[in-house]
Amino acid sequence: MSDCLFCKIAKGEIPSNKVYEDEVCYAFYDIDPQAPVHFLVIPKMHLASVAEVTADNAAVAGHMMAVISKVAKQMGMVSYRVVSNIGEQAGQSVPHLHFHVLGGRDMTWPPG
Ligand code: 5GP
Ligand code: ZN
Image (cartoon, rainbow, N blue to C red; front, side, top):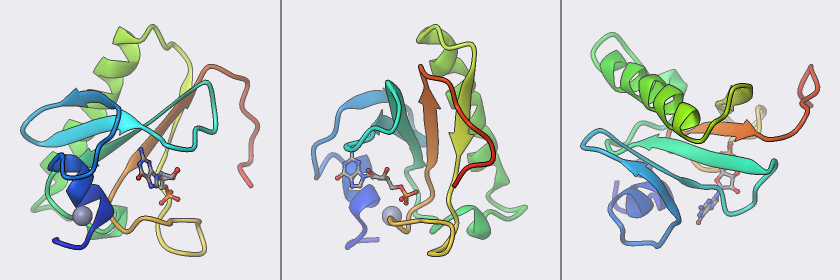
């Protein structure tokens, strides 16, 4: 999607601090970190949110989970949180599917 911020980041048209990249997804540090470690994993294809994950594209979301697991291990993270906000009420501000990966501090539950 040409006017999508995260599509532009995935294509390298907007600079970001890369964590990981392959043919399916891209991971980069959040510009406004909410924990000592806070990166985002996004698909290279445009999906607006988890709400657009279907049986036809579920392999992309599954691959992103495997990447989160691999990268977190490489970073030495043993306890961390994976979050995806869907829609305005949940706090989604960028309408391109992304998983937040947060770690390095104590977390509380429930989230706000
Ligand atoms: P959401 O609010 O949609 O769940 O998460 C969007 C996230 O993207 C926020 O945590 C925000 O800080 C991050 N973000 C927004 N714009 C940029 C940007 O241009 N670069 C980076 N690295 N992160 C961004
Ligand atoms: Zn997009």
